[in-house]
Image 1 (cartoon, rainbow, N blue to C red):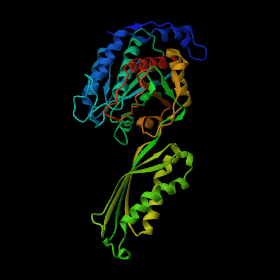
Image 2 (cartoon, rainbow, N blue to C red):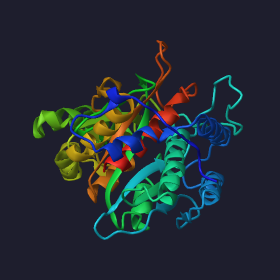
Image 3 (cartoon, one colour):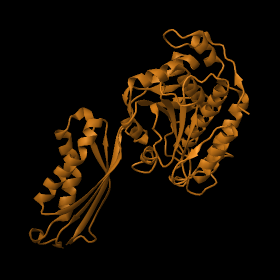
Image 4 (cartoon, helix red, strand yellow):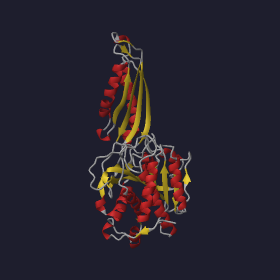
Length: 415
């Protein structure tokens, strides 16, 4: 049995531009009912109690699959047993599917909250809101399934539940390889934002997240006594120069508006004050705000590293691991989300959002089809506590789930 739909009458919530009476009626009739709201909150809490890391989301996948099947849908689990897709509505060659994407995985972070739905798995927690993303897309699917049964779904839709978003370079590549974008013309997603108040979303055209790559350097050379550095390859000096010069040189080799930066997280060299070591290691991240600069970054980074290392006669092994490109929101998709939120909650419920330096593998989908990611407000009204993602005390105002469902449902109806 499908979810009960509640009628909402709010003429002030219509988006800019004329909408047909049928569309407006459909928008008002697809608010999340109290019964569905309660079910979705409990579903999210169940996922929160049982977090699973990337490519281990077997239970999470099964929970989503089972609920979709009870709604009369036919989800398909992706290769590897984690992640799934579910089509709603018949294929229409004139109307490509609108895809709605969620990520399933949790983080290797202890849950420090004192709530009854606290993680039951030691050292793991849904500290990034993926349990909310999953529940939002599931709830949207339940509402859309009811519309489809009543012949009121305006276009075919695909739900994409993706594994391993937190694993570089991201499970989106696995999903794309499994052809989840076949027949898809546009893809939308939300991401929890603890800086945005519940009931609101943040939108931005163009880049909304950063590219994020990983850089590892291993330097080698003949060591020796610190009294005779001229007879050695001074790896400590070479490492120090690379650590400081590489970020500095990049600021003069690329357009500063691209935001290309390197931040080191680990430097290791030597064991004694009077011994020049034979090996040194550097590890850090490369972040970039601009897509074209990100494509050029590996060659440029290699070139500068080789030049600096050569001055000290150091042999250097470079491991440049691609992570994710920036999420670049397509203008038409952003406007679709803007109109959808305006229709459901009013234009006052939308705020501009800044570009983040965090990475998001939703960007890989946008290399193939247009789309956009919105920031979903999860901060309780009036709460001034500053919280961030990837922290053990991260939690959400669960009213955000219904907001996300109504946003996506309205986007489908308006598309």
